[in-house]
Amino acid sequence: MNTLVSANASYHFAQHTRRITRLAIISAIVAVLSVGAIVLDTLGAVPSSLRGLGIIGYLVGIIAFVVLLPMLILSYQYSRGGLWIDEEGARVRFPGEKIQEITWSEARFAVNEGEEYLQISKGKEGLGHIFSDTRYIRLHLEGLTPEQRERATAAIAQHCEMRHPARFTLATLLNNKGETIARGRLYLFERELVCAENRGEKRVFFSAPLAKLTSIRQRDPFHVGKLEFEAFSLRYAGSYYVIMLGYETTLSGNIGTSSHWSVTGYASNWIEALNVKA
Image (cartoon, rainbow, N blue to C red; front, side):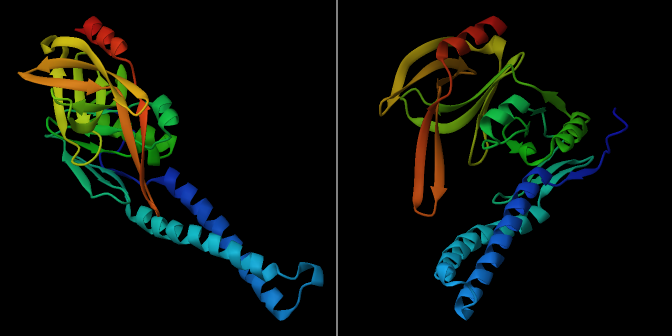
């Protein structure tokens, strides 16, 4: 056991908090300057060549306020959030999400997707997870500084196995009729293939020892618009799964929601990797 790592530790999302604080400060400064410009223009204390400065200040001030308000709300939420690790288990409180908890007696293993994945994904799909047989919790390590991540993963490793996937991608899990079951996370470990729900209830659909996978074969591709997504199928424990290597990202905004499909891999690469490790 690493004696430098406390058995009871808390980690606030310092990386995200710094970014939010920086934006909040910049927005506040711009808002104050805009108010000053409006006041000076109203009092006629600006040269005639700068008349209309108040209008510009008003417009810029609105933009600054629109940015500042959500930053202040997020700052408050982040001040209450964090990752807590103790002798009983792990707990995560992240803005916009319900509190997540898992006990070490329930946990099977933890996953760190790695710094390279963090850079590629920009943290949008989370970094770091703890899995049980039926569900997982998202640790949101992307919100921590590199130093915090190192300490947190070391603390978790004292209680359960910390795995690093040989292959990982986002995918869409389908049934044998081609109907969508869920948007998922697909992990290939040394001796196991794990497929879990990426959103929603964070269910684990299967944790399959590679030696027990059968009927691994490539399927006809699926199409969404002009995009083509390769797929493969497999059997495990009497169930049939179709994994499409494409993923739909849904974005919510002030004017509604939009979605974007991305190719996330190639069936031949996954089939080859599964056969080599089986």
